[in-house]
Amino acid sequence: MTEIDGHYNMPDKVSYACRLLRKAVAAHGARLVVVADGATLDAIDQSLWTLTPTEFIPHCRIEDDAHILARSPVVLAESGEASLPDRPILVNLGAELPARFERFERLIDIVSSDDADKLAGRTRWRHYKDRGYAIRTHPYGGSAS
Image (cartoon, rainbow, N blue to C red; front, top):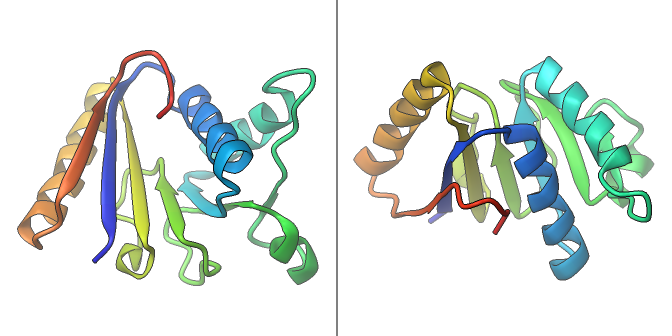
């Protein structure tokens, strides 16, 4: 069963997600898929290039060539994308329930402090709970876990 981590009340989802991705890739060698709307993906793409002057988090878009997808630890895909690459971890920054999230070993669902985003997050949370998923919660505390 997919492990679910809910990170909530994030004042800046993009910044938080980028720090989380940096930590996951650098410390654990993780391979992840990030789903969000197009504007959020653009912001993440830009932020991953400029997170710190001495670090680069390799990443690509789902529509990139297969050899680039195979080598990139982080793949960015629009919410609702039907064909996500096989990776152990899915990071959701979108409002919708990620399609076929249950095929991933782990889902990290990030919710901002914005009222509309919190409402969408609660809807997803109920969906997970109603299907028996245990959710580990991570309220905002200033750093990515």
